[in-house]
Length: 130
Image (cartoon, rainbow, N blue to C red; front, side):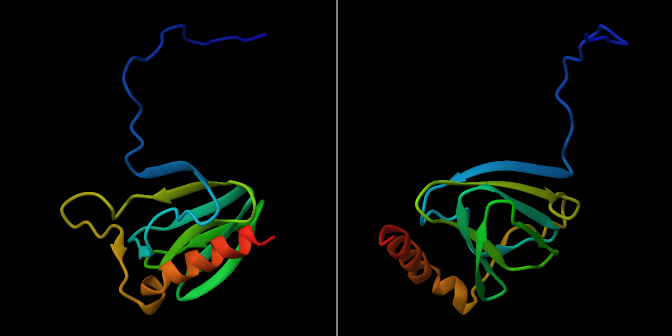
């Protein structure tokens, strides 16, 4: 049984300007985005499949139910891996990502960012050779 306190339905859009939530499906070798850092914290939960996390110049394998927490300023990206699609839920604060003083999604020029294409090629090659 469903009960309601107020039968009126709001017609305006809710304001979630300080919270970003994304559900992303990545194919093997497909990056979630460029290697970057943001001014706010982010969390990533692998719902299914496998992925590679590139974080602060390192590469780490992720699998279902792995959770990654990135503090503000953490350089990162996630790339689909394995034999099937990977589903990732991303949740992030947006406190410092809006307004005149934005510091959002600054792209890194670190060596790992330049080498990411080679890492993607390795990820695709290893997933197709299984």
